[in-house]
Every structure is written in C-alpha cells, then in structure tokens.
Length: 115
Image 1 (tube, rainbow, N blue to C red):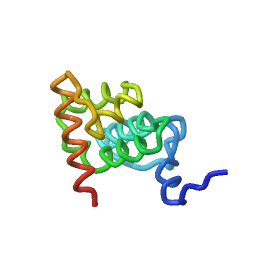
Image 2: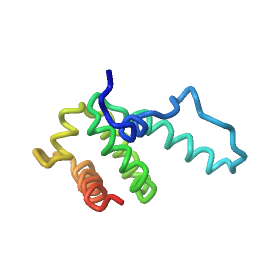
Image 3: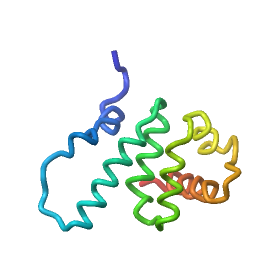
C-alpha cells in the first residue's frame, strides 16, 4: 500500500520512453528537445523518491539554461549511484570532478529557489 500523497506519486508518474504520449505537430528541433527531456525524465527516476523529486525539479526548472557541456555533465551525473548523488545534493560530500561540482551547485541553487 502506498501512503504517499497523490501529489508526490503523480510527480513520479509519467510516460515511459516507449510511450511518448499524444503526437504533436512540432518542428524537428522542438521534437528532438522534447524527446531528450522525456528520456532524461526516465533517467531521473531513482530508487529514492527524494532524488526523483530533486532531479526532476531541476530538469523542469534549470536544465534548459545549461549549455551543451553542462547537459552532458548532467547525463554523467545521472549515471552515478543514488547514495553518492544524495551525499552530493545534501552537501555531505563534494564531487572531485569540477564540472560535476559546478552542476551540483546549480541543482542545489535551483532547489533553494524552487517555485
């Protein structure tokens, strides 16, 4: 039985990469960006609900501002184990990689200024 409030479970729910949702008439670039976001949403699903929420929040509210290098760093970040990500995001540890460290700082700033 899931005792989580509906708002939390609704945030985790979403189309799988195999279910792109309703078709929309969009330009090729918009469609490619939308596919990229959907793929990343799927990768943001973690074994820890807290990480799901933090990473998806950043994806929705901060990812668009990243340049190409930072976007690749975000994908590398998603390849890290949950416990390491949690330690970085709560400030218990700092990534040795300067690019990941800067990205973690941006994610933490986006969380602090969450709408």
